[in-house]
Image 1: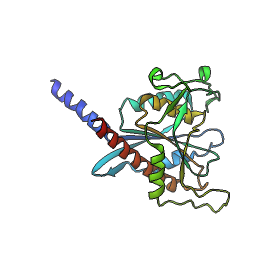
Image 2: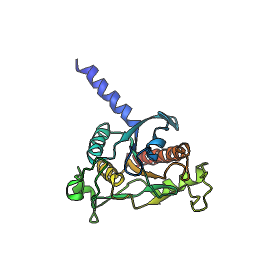
Image 3: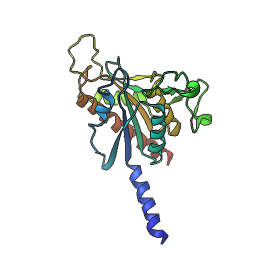
Image 4: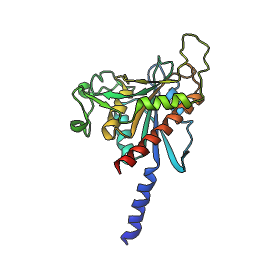
Length: 236
């Protein structure tokens, strides 16, 4: 009687090996009508073929609320996905930022539901082993390599004509911020820093359309898959 149950568990584990979960945020102050991160994420394909493998892309919109992030992160990692990509909008960015780290302090701002985080810091599952003396968690993926590879291969170029907007497609960043973007990144890095990344996207048409942003995010995901796969070979 237990055999079918065992097969079901094994099948679920195999499916999760090729599961990639990508999140974008919902509305918040200054972005009430549309959040550029979710607009790009929702355009991603449902499946991604890569070097003979087929990955399922599961896309989720997360409310800009601390409690919603806590629940989302818990549920996401319960599936043990191959990769988790969080996206958020950076109101004054003029290119895509690939974030290197998150820090656990100064979460003083109220969320979109006007709720504040007790003690202005997050409760982490693995904080004693993952957190360094500066209260930061660093991404285990090679962010500089991600930027290098995607910048050299991406055919997307900004369409904006405003000279004040730079023409760089993407760059690395060590300032994810102290709002919900930094909060969700911190929570997922605490779960698995080697399978988590955060991407900040600029507002729509400043300078990328949602379709253009989606293409860059997709190229970033492909490079992340390559790195995770290579790291697994080394571990073996």
